[in-house]
Length: 130
Image (cartoon, rainbow, N blue to C red; front, side, top):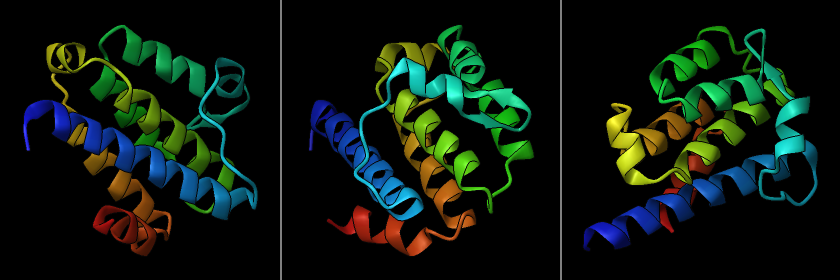
């Protein structure tokens, strides 16, 4: 598997994880993230769009720390915000991620870990086996 194939594979896995979690959380078909959706989600005392803006500025690790330090894994809207956060990161260019001291593999690991803590670890494992 070459680099481009691996990158595409990781992006597909993250999108599939997002689709599955949203289906379980809300009982409806998941739609790709859109900016107005980011405005309605809040996690760890911050609006999702604020965390995405931090990531856009290269402060990905800092945004992730804020997200994970205060998330209530029993609150489905906060879990949804975390899913959207990781999907957003998965769509960033690899060069930008690397310049921000992050990687696509870290996006996948973060998403998987978050799903496990939210009680969706078996779903994450099933998606990764596909």
